[in-house]
Image (tube, rainbow, N blue to C red; front, side, top):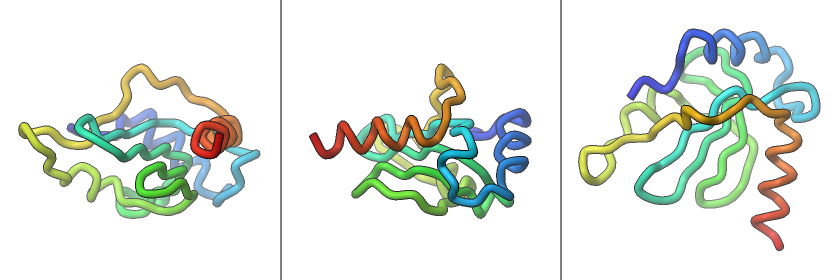
Length: 105
């Protein structure tokens, strides 16, 4: 599956200059492992090999990941990492706070 649409890529690239500041940018896309753990929330990107966002996998962190690498993941049943097509853009700080609340209740 191609994880990026042109619109998502444009929004993420535009926010690149905001770095890791959760309060000044939105999460523009959500990617997930349909067979297990792993969710990536895209905030910004320089290019397909350097994306920045919230990663909820082995732990919860803010950091970089590669769109190209996510697209190359081979999962059971011939599946791969998918984009949540129903996800609506949200402030990054809201998603982070919600994940912190759920993870550490």
